[in-house]
Length: 443
Image (cartoon, rainbow, N blue to C red; front, top):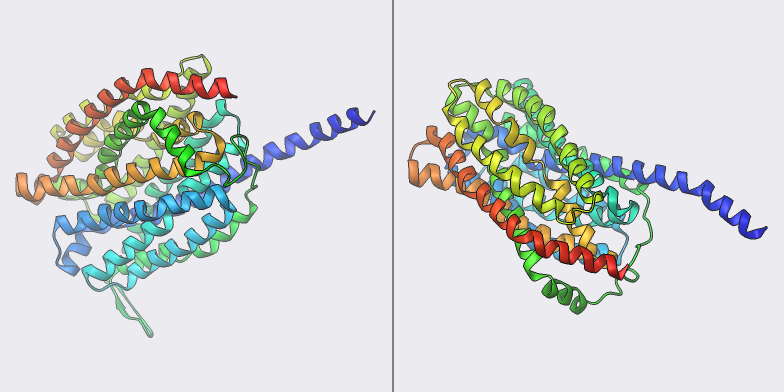
């Protein structure tokens, strides 16, 4: 009788737990959206910042790439460790408060150095989100759903990028020639945009405490797995992890390059205004990227459920080549609309964040997930986030020596790094099958 009552109680509780897991995913999606909005708003204001601060494309590349990519590795691993040991909700909350205030501080910068410091602060704060959120979601959902779940979470980056373009264009239009505020003096339109988009995050951060904090599923309790065991796991699967992280880092280079420079490409090559660029790219980013983010995760989940244990790498080995071809052909388009149309397959494929995150969760024991997500994310952010925007600027400043040639700098970046990613994924498929099989055997 008692067993029947316990079973009935568990049966009653299970839907509530499942429902709250989806609620938590929705809140983390919103937080991810805010993070990417704060990160990407600068891409729409390249021309204005260059003119006001008298800086080069190379310095703009630092603001969009290295400022984040160099801060992230310094803090992602210790924050990943904190995610394995302490409350993951508190890690996210404190990180969000920090990056929101740093993003707002960018609105008060009047030279390159303080703006660089503010962007570094955004990178430091956002280093808390990925490891903690991915660990939470990995313990909230079954393995066979993680591709979809991580893709939904990663859609926040996509939505944040699109909304940053839309809001940035609207705020710049509203601010006109700038605003003069009591005690603050005159603020340029781009400074107003940083403040308007940065401050709300400090309030939205409170929502994280509505996210359930599930028990860690396997591999020991929080904080009990020593670093030595984690490093032994990484050495044992070094071939898979190397192909995985270098492949996705190559895709990150191309992705970050596009996120940072696509607005400038449309503005410089096709003569569009900032408002027109922002509105059009916002629609393009969400309309193509959102189905890509969810669709890529669903396709990989279905392949994995059918027993294709290297589905995550196999899928992206193919789509990377298609995306590379589109990226190379697009600059031949005579109009901006045709240019964007040719980029549709590339934009669809570039939304791989969920697949990338799910791959780590599938092969890693639960008590290591926060640190593994942090280490893998650190490497990808360092290589991709730092290099992507800067590679385009390097080609523009030193190879083509012409700001108008940024469209071909972006194409060259795609032509190099996307086929490289496909090759690395191909080499990583067999070791991934071995790694997945080992964890399955342990369970």
